[in-house]
Length: 393
Ligand code: SAH
Image 1 (cartoon, rainbow, N blue to C red):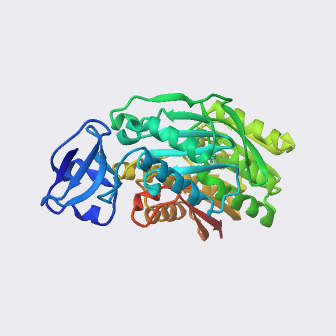
Image 2: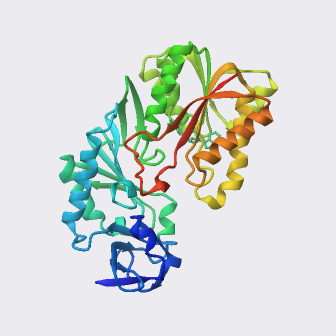
Image 3: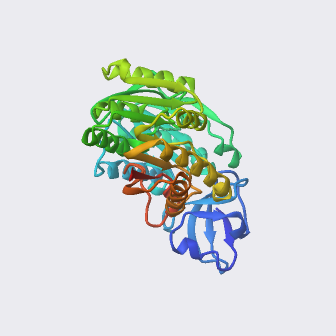
């Protein structure tokens, strides 16, 4: 068993059960990619079992803080089962859900989503990658399912020194699927879509949006960064008169259009623009067009804190433009999924956007990811998605 020894003082975060060990914390020791190491304090005291990642700044990720524990197939079967059992207690109105959410479920670097009878997994860390076959078996064992598709084709794999990989890991089946969320059906593609195919984390926000549409009798709705039209369908289901959806991806727009039809809505109630959101917002403002409700759910502008300043300007810009074309009394659902932007900073950005737009509003609700994307009290980095529901004065 290989060992890594930490510098003096660097044991503190492990005592607080934080699962990341940065390169700078390590005094000596090393191992192969994904290999399990014993982590010791500078005095040689046991701290954790971790997966070593020779090329990542996060040089090791903790599997377990318990010395008697063995990191073996039984361990992975148990952790997967615990994550899946926890979901049975969560409030999830869908047949598609996240079963394993990385560090929050004690499985750093592993993401597993279930779409009906198909599992889609991402092995994003050296440790998760090394144990891929074991984890695949554990997942099938815990769920009783047979189909498992891998979507480890993310750029973050390069940070771990891993190539991008995608394809069926166990059995095979269709990659174009339809999920049932709340009362509506949404088509997705697990092979070509973003992440594992769908933004499951916005499930509860979509339902809230439908509720606002119903309660306020929204007429003109604008869904920015619409992807496959989740918020579009939600608004139409809530009775919105007309929804304009904007996304720069042709494939996403095609799926969004199909999703509106799939749910039986009159196509005249929906307009789709394959366009840049920023440019479209400027055009709406220039032509005097305004809306009763706007969703702003952009991609990750700041993956880490290092990108926060530039990302802040980008968030402020779109929020300023959106507030300008929002009618008085209208609602803005605005989000950031950037790990590098805290909830507090995001609030300040939206406040600044309001000042620049000359608009004030009531914060009606603070939103977060759906409960199957949990954060734990010991892993604050788990909070990546935050949103504000603002009603313009
Ligand atoms: N709200 C969606 C998820 C949005 S993901 C849902 O509920 O499913 C972000 C989307 O922004 C992606 O579909 C991506 O194609 C799109 N996108 C990224 N940059 C864009 C830009 N500059 N203009 C328009 N769309 C953009």
